[in-house]
Length: 396
Image 1 (spheres, rainbow, N blue to C red):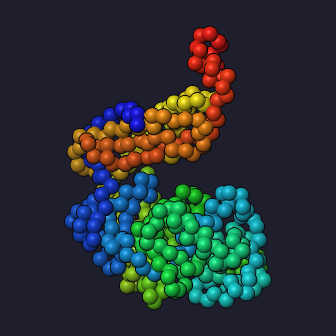
Image 2: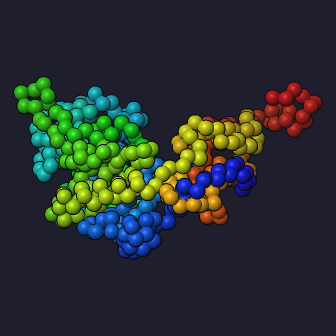
């Protein structure tokens, strides 16, 4: 590996960094806030607090316990839906037909009739705001042809995200054998969903209508009351079954930070909302983001051996940031560009060619994979010959 020291940024005495240490075992051990954070979610069976931008875990309690996720399952359903939209496989105006099976779901629903059609846009409203089990199945059938085929996609996505505590048996979270997830995995899925900014239009709305211009308009009120009562809250999904108890994966943004908080197995909605609010308060009061590179910044170049191009600029695909603890004097933050020494053509777009490593002292705070922004084909023998002979031929 080729290591280039890019910069040293000494942060004045007002800030300090928190490396991505994670609590082990109980809620009282090893988390960023120490004793102050130890009782953030005393009522929850399982919980996690994460910075959405960096993935830094601030607090966790039994976060890898495999538990019934109830309707928080629908976060994965929404993720596959918005991915289909981004890939052009769906349009928001596409009509989704309700099957007999979808209409029979019961539980939380938007009372779809067999044969009734709604747009993808309205189905997303029904899933995000009203937790519609019927809308979830109708959407699954639209995307994959059947709910079972869609569940296969859900599990494939969970595997692609590296989730170890998750297996889905349906798309809506109704009680089922072999259907489980964890606070940690739900936070990861939530963070992935938040990369699709259009989802906030649905999860952050407190009230809306379906069938507004029909004889039977249906008033939607968001099951997540934090979007109305907590400043900055704009998602994501509530859940309840008698087995799972009261669950919530919530997100809020304030002062450049976005938090994800997940609680499972809370005793009631009041405790659930109060504890998630306290988790948000803790993150926003104790932490700030320090940006190393902004999205679009050129952060270096990588040499390409035997390619039609000899160098490829490395452009930040997102904001590269670290989460810093307020109020603790630190030595400073430095970052290094670590590039693969021998990158040979052909190079595929998205191929990993190095990483950006952010340090505090000798400790690693964060690593970002750096990927090729375009495809670089292998050069022909004549071009390579001209390069090798140098001044004998015109430089390319």
